[in-house]
Image (cartoon, rainbow, N blue to C red; front, side, top):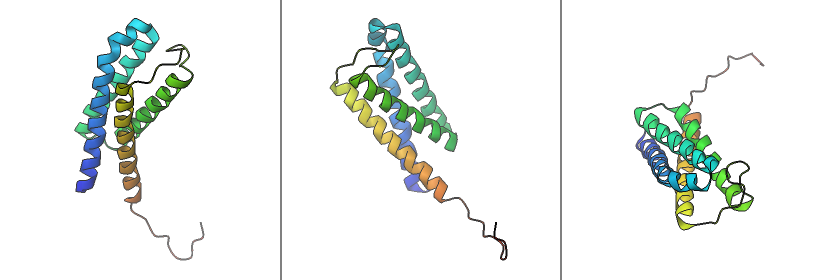
Length: 136
């Protein structure tokens, strides 16, 4: 793996770990608001912690796809949470705050790094030439 790939992988791992820590620290506050919101933060914490550990241990493309999906899902969820609210979890729109914006910035960087790594892996796949005379 090229040095750049290692750096991008480390960025994804750090973004997962930071997001897990912040979501974990906010679980009690969100449990006080509602059980749904609190459990959502528990799930985010567990997913990001598992991804940080898994990517550190080298789960590869599967982990990167999972990280991409979790980052995208939480970014989209936050967008809904501050505009319309999330049915069942947090029905009323949430106020925007600096910690949330900083967390989303970290997650956006993690999303971009995971995407770059996946794109690089797709480009690095060997291309098998077709035998001459075949049209399919």
